[in-house]
Every structure is written in C-alpha cells, then in structure tokens.
Length: 146
Image (cartoon, rainbow, N blue to C red; front, top):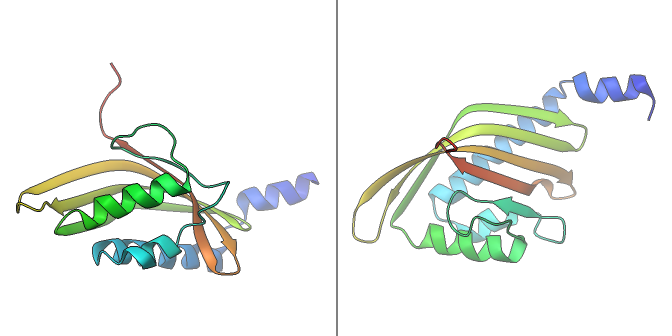
C-alpha cells in the first residue's frame, strides 16, 4: 500500500460512514433495550472471525455461538435492560469502524432489583452487504488492576 493511501485511510474522516455507524449503534442499543434479541443478533457478523470479551463470566474470548447464547440469556433473563453510550468515538478505516465508549446500563432483575453498571467498551464493525455489522466486542469494568 502506498504511503499516501495509508495516510489518507488513517486521516480521512469518512463522515457518511461515521453517521451510518452511529445510527447502527443506536439500532443496536434500541434492540437491546427493547429485548428484541433476534434483531440484536442480526447486527452481529457471527462467523469464524467474530470475537468478544465480556465484563461478566466467562471472561475468556467468546466466539459467535457463545456470544449468541450468553447475550440471549443475559438480555432475556431480566425484566429491563437500559444501555446508554457515553463519550462515543467512531473512527472509520474505509470498511472497518472502531468505536470506543463507556456503556452505562441499568438492569431490573426478575425479582425487581435494580442494578447499575459501567464498562469501557470497544466495538469493531465491518461494512458488508447488510450494512455495518459487529465483528468484535470488548467490555471491561471500571476496576483497577492490583
């Protein structure tokens, strides 16, 4: 790849794609909030290249099948799930987007207990025929290493 092409990929803002990704993140959060699990799953590129690190057990790398099962159990296993994105940054590299944000989310469990969480988050999306799809997710809680 030529140096000038490399520099343009690294510095080009890609405003149209940035808006598309921001809208896709809104769609993702809306589906999660509404517990529309099939819709939420449709925004993932589950397959051999999909990976996720979560802020809850299991803490090891998950593949698409594990993510599908664990997200379904987590979102459908509560009465309410209310995610909010804070301090969103979207960087576009042609057909790949790296998004970083803080996810603040509230949960109402089956017994009516309310819980609040904050996680640092990275989502990597790739653009294909169906639009921008999640290819990697990484969530980590706000705790210091000891």
